[in-house]
Amino acid sequence: MRQDVSQKTVAVLGASGATGRHVVSTAAERGHEVVALVRRPGAFAQREGVREVIWPDVVEAPELAGVDVVISALGGADKGPTTVCADGIRSVVAAMREVDVTRLIAVSAHGVLETHDGSLYSRAVWSRVAERMRDKEEMEKVVAGSDVDWTLVRPPALSNAGATGEYRTGVDLPIRLWSSIGRADLAAFLVDEAENPRYVRARPRITR
Image (cartoon, rainbow, N blue to C red):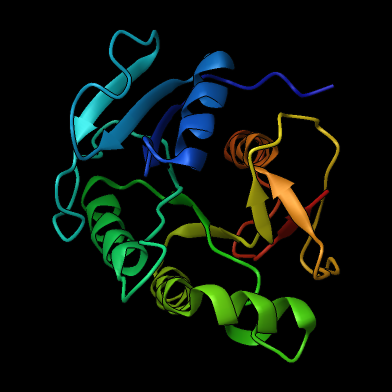
């Protein structure tokens, strides 16, 4: 059974994306106040417990006053060069420092940095989305070089499967070519980590 936790104000980056929407819904359903950072208004119109903050350009520092924890579900374009994750996190870390927010949880990807190895999974993902992986690598360097209490979550392939609550996490969890995790379960883990930190300054993996 999940422990009772005090209500937090959770800022969600990439809130209107496929994973970000699950993070917003999960946090709101658990009674947290959610600050959804979006490029355009209207994504969460009249959603109880959710306040939209317009963040039209990721290179500009967003407003984070009053926030307890930041969860990033930022993702770049499927094709072509992208720097969305690195640029966004760089701006957010600066904004966090300005208002003394110390907790950051960011979705990265298995296959970056030291996990960019000769495994079938790593070779397959880099053959498909190399530019996005480079962006995640640069994002991780920004996060790990900061002075915040960070967690970098490294999922394998994401699916739109419904929430099951049946998944595993760990910093050395084996990831196979067929490994995957549903976005809803990933969101649940991200909010769990915001409520009860287990992986501070660590890079947990998550898979079914």
